[in-house]
Image 1: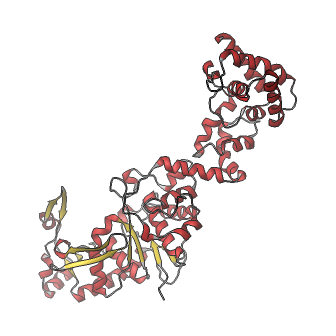
Image 2: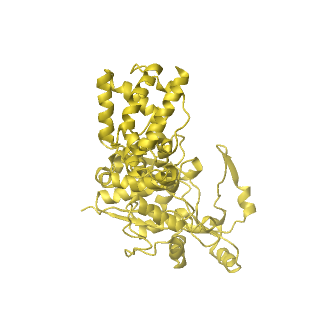
Length: 484
């Protein structure tokens, strides 16, 4: 019987969580949950220089908003803790495994100073890199001991074979073979005693039983060195699931101009829409449906179908998807979300529930509400030619005639509910033998001063009320008087 997947999301507490981080977390979550496995949160805080106060809270808050509940983590001990790398470092876990590699001849102490390392720098493909020459591998045990006793600063390096090849299997790219001569002896333990990201990951993934590792394409080049470490320890290599880069072949990150999850929420996007969108950045479900709840994503997700094509962060598509979520949302929840914007942009006394109902299917992000409701506060200045509508055969003289004809009826009208107003306008249409649009268009233009509105003429009139409606229609007549 196959073991159920154990996956992890291992962010560094260095700031906001950008969409690339979120996608890593989401894919790891979906792989685990699709087969009833375990999703773990592990905090990688060994890079002390980049640590940011409060970043851990951001990680927890983002995961909660996105609905990605972890089964194990710093706050949920599943028997594999500690789940924070600095705490594991304090227990000597990484030092222990590094020493095991030294004892096996798979790692060694390196005492080279900065000056010597600088002399080894090479420029390859326009990038300056240091290719270490295994200088300290030739030190005798006595020489090593002497330097250690003298307190000479050192790092511990992986001893990569100088000859032969290393092959690793990637779930998307298949088997990849590299010459060992192309691999550098990467540092495992830094001079400050902390493990490097690469070494800590291998040790933690094995000791925590991780079966599937979701990581960016940029780590493909490091995979052979990972595998040599697994082989050196005699450990089973996990399944590698890559994350495809963006259209410029860069990882999705804040540095590449991609938004953080927090920023997107602040811009008026819904957490569930962002999660839905991010899931489709590199993975395509069967069929044409693109709107998925998190539970539907769990059921449909198959990491073997991740595309090799670059992921395109299309803001237009994200906005469309967000709008679809608003359309499907129940009115009460939308009203709660829209309230801060309605309070800000709609004056007191107007029925904000009715306005929310009108705008729900017309916006893509919450800040769109402003442009849809600002005319309720005050009639904007507008061009009288807005009354002209060629398709409806509405001219300026006809618009003037309609407004002048309907005004006394609306003055006499007591019931300013949508239905009653609609009946009044329809009776005027029949009596004058006009088309619906030839009456509705001029009235809607007069009461809104806009070509596009969230509701029809009578819906707007109901919200505005009798006094304001009549004042705006009289202003429309005055504008048309000057123009005709």
